[in-house]
Amino acid sequence: MTLLAFAAAGGSIGALAAMRIFRHKTLHLKFKYGVSFLLILQIAGLIYLHLP
Image (cartoon, rainbow, N blue to C red; front, side, top):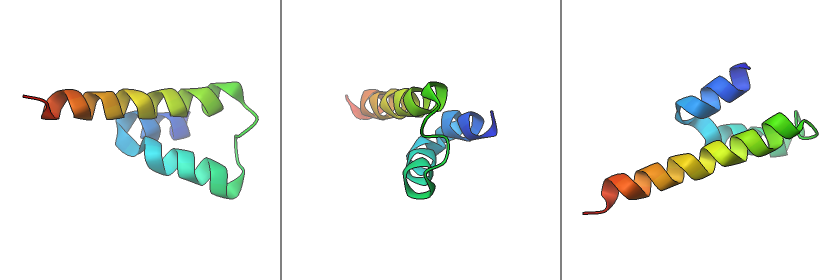
């Protein structure tokens, strides 16, 4: 849950990179798709905030 909490707090890029580099939690669907989904949400939020 700590990994998902840090990913939700804005560290989804780092969490996803760490999962790939260290091959940790890559088989768990909750982490595999959850962190990716959080990354997409964060990118969409940044785009929304920067559009006029």
